[in-house]
Length: 258
Image 1 (cartoon, rainbow, N blue to C red):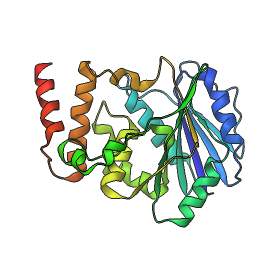
Image 2: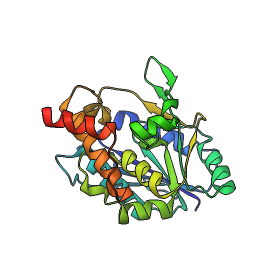
Image 3: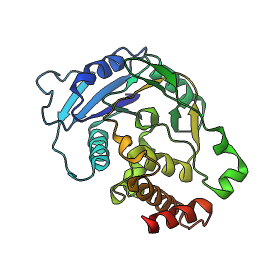
Image 4: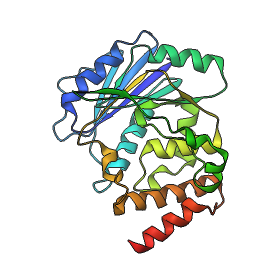
């Protein structure tokens, strides 16, 4: 088995059919789809387990921290998976039918075992490519502010089984309550491995009012700066040293004010 697509979903039944369909339409043969659902009204009677698709309904484990529930779903799916490579996918997003084909070529040609692609954002009324923040590659920006790469979301991340295993074992992902798995896994990869960012249209990220990340996206909110501080602390934990820069100082000061 080459690939395991792990779909985490929670109360996304109106999007899940479309999500699964894009996985079943892959222009590739050696893969499986694992759906892990924590919805209050699960779809377990709708999806029958087949050779290609496995559906699991589990209870939420972390009532106060949705991002940790997402992490738990992915970990659960990982333990049920058999693929050499893991593709993560939120239950409201979609894959291009060429995604696994492209990833197979990349993983076969390079030592890099973790990839994130630049997604297209879509809704009922629009479709556009995510903005690439080229300034994050600037040497001075990395020194003065932050040195980690741009993070495009859970559904854009694919990696080897070994990396995800090490992440759950050594990255302590359940100890940081406000950080979603995309932030933690990309930071973990950034400090441990070489990360490839692809600019091909392989992932479509749905934009709507219930996106999990919207809670932390408002720059003037307390939750934004709390998560920012936790992200910096997690980065220090992975690097095994504190890096005092402008980003660190600003974040600390704002959290004291709040």
